[in-house]
Length: 272
Image (cartoon, rainbow, N blue to C red; front, side, top):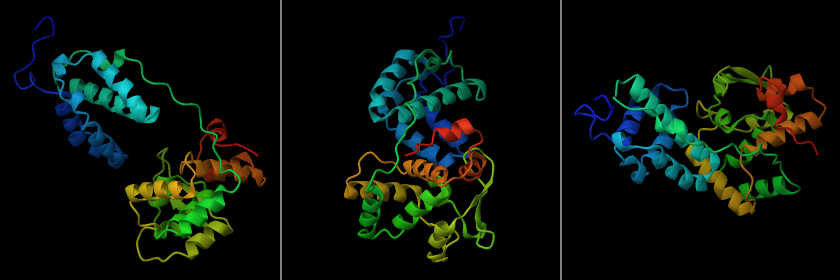
């Protein structure tokens, strides 16, 4: 007990998997981003080599080995997993009363962020996306692409947009739940209004599609159009850059994009 090696009987055989499942059941549902975090945790729980390690045997090198292997899937994916593992350990120790030692995640290096993306649509890529979209049976690709460019909205904001938050008279839409936790009104120009007016209002959601379905449709669209390095979030870069190129001021663009500081906004600006 003095050396910290003794564990209560019910925790002696607890594994990292037990800890992460408890975190998924108790903590994740209370968060704003519960759904995406649940998806990440369920994927993480399939890492059996790490999950099967008992908590009393878990050492920093176990997580470092996992980190190095996970980096092949991308820096952001690796960071998300390590943050979840670290948070679960701290929560189990502090809030659940589990008899755990110092957090081994505190002793390993986390991968550094990639440089900010500077990707915009290249010459002819918009036309290729639209042409490939029209050949698809997925009806929502063209309107979502155009709406994203015109409004600079994020994918999650677009997919959660409700018709009762669309004000056609004042030409704006309300986003009650944004990434920074604050609601914001997004003004609609003629092109954005035209997109909405051409949609059928048969559902509470403007675009009644799940996030997973849209991700899959977007990936298929990129392959058909032979554009391999374009993410949907790059359309936000494209839209914000176009706003500046049209002569809008910094405050005007910030009101549309939702950025709270100019430095955050400028990461999205690549003028031609």
